[in-house]
Length: 135
Image (cartoon, rainbow, N blue to C red; front, side, top):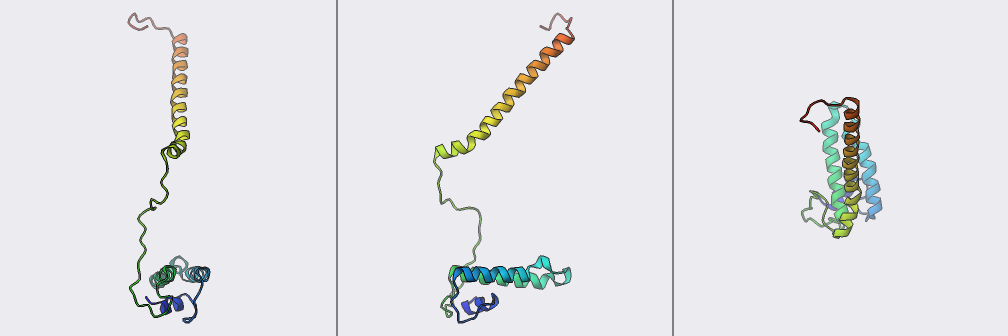
């Protein structure tokens, strides 16, 4: 998709050089108007096609392809497969994030064990065993 076509799809003039904030505002406006969830089932397919074109135009302008208007290079599709590993955490940061969960688990197990021991002692007092093999 060329820059002129992308600008026209977003409702911008084909000769303008919009700022990133103008492109984003135009995309939000057009996406709101043509979102497939806003249409009945009979018109959903055409709305979905239009929405995909608008998203493609936004990606094209966001990446800067076609800003001059004559750039006919193939546009790049952005596919996210997960968050990039830009910020590496140190081991201490990872531990500080995991520490509260670890303490919660340890506390739950400890309190559960104490509670079970008290219940066993209470039951033992209430109903003494006459079995010589049990303590």
